[in-house]
Image (cartoon, rainbow, N blue to C red; front, side, top):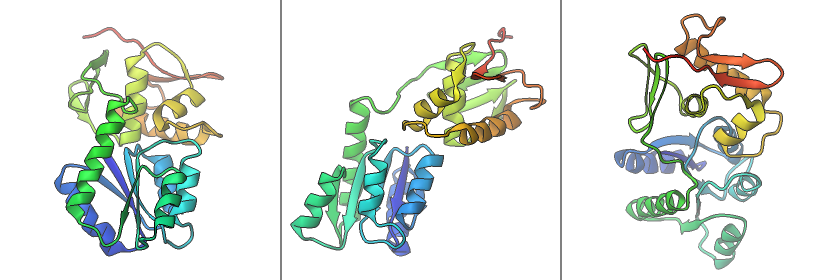
Length: 231
């Protein structure tokens, strides 16, 4: 699972990262609210750890913007310990709150607790299926993609796009549908974002990306993964 840490104190980010990576999580790092929002837009994030006091965009403002269309679990950090800050953070959408200084092991425990709740209530897809069309195979349990038995490495966002389309091979998805299902937010002018990811996926799975066998455009509608006979 992917966790975003957002704090302008790089030493705190580094320390938290070590503990989370030791637990097997992939960590994304941001040092202000603007960077955090950009990362959420471009990657699949399962939990956010957000500081309050930061330059350019503080954690309160960033959290309010994130909560406009995304319910990713969010743990708020602050050097302030007053009840007002805790209440404000929780009221604007934080799921938990920790005052600095804190015990990193307690933070890790709270991360695990939030992710359990997030998964239990169905916000994360859980599947052990294998999806196949022709020589394209997605083992969703192992998170492995192969094309003609050769492993292909995709980013988390690219993986989720290809899994969506391959699991529904033959069905055409509009750009808006792809964006909303993959990013789990309302689509606002998603054309460029989706098309860039589609192009990069083709470059990795197609012999000739300009004449794709699998990932095809349906002009004026959207994209689909073609149904191909198994072999």
